[in-house]
Image (cartoon, rainbow, N blue to C red):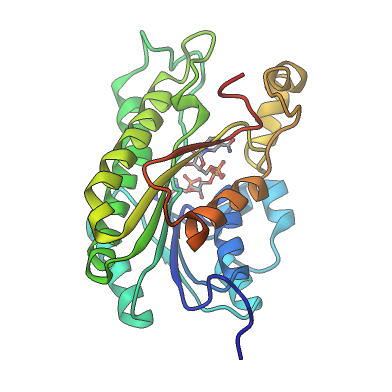
Length: 270
Ligand code: NDP
């Protein structure tokens, strides 16, 4: 008997999934039937943000996935450490026999908009943000490419940002914008590389997404002013992003590769 779950029998990996948008990706893939492994520095990192903690239905996202009757694995690891990531992928394939979907979501910015203007941002901040976003994504892609090439199938999704396309008015957050632009371009190189193996590689580029971490920051920046630039007139939700991830993880997107898909209510091209 089949249960009509489109991702039943698939195995997924989601990085940066302890909270926020990555958690929504992991839960969405699990609800569509995929077994899901998650990676994060700390699977309890949601506790740092009241809104994130309030939304949790288990001790960690791993428990939440198991609660809906799906197999889950959790790794507390740094995606900038290639060795640890390779070991995690080997364990996933060892336990579940394959790896079909990888969502390279771990990332984020560090520093204030003022101290990260393009002309003054310090090397330490650049190094941290490039490592978190670009290097971590490359390591994740290289680790999952090994089983996917062998299988001659797979779906990889990287996570860019509207900041990789739009330039902030004051030139702030330059290191993050540059790192996310590089993630998008790396995605297209990887799509070219892995296409002959039947592996698709695409990038989502979220706009202003209201997570437990970001909602208070957006409000402090001025909701009305920010939303003035968003044609749909509201912030995005992690679920908005998860819908696009579901599409890029399923056979609905089998002829889509090397695409950079904004999930931003129209912000990027407004
Ligand atoms: P969060 O900071 O809320 O969650 C990201 C999670 O990833 C955190 O638990 C973080 O841990 C973890 N993480 C970061 N770096 C690493 C690493 N090297 N190894 C393992 N885990 C890591 O972010 P969001 O949910 O808001 O964003 C998710 C992704 O979407 C990020 O790549 C972000 O850049 C991107 N994005 C988000 C937007 C938004 O509006 N929210 C807009 C555009 C893009 P810790 O906190 O301990 O560092």
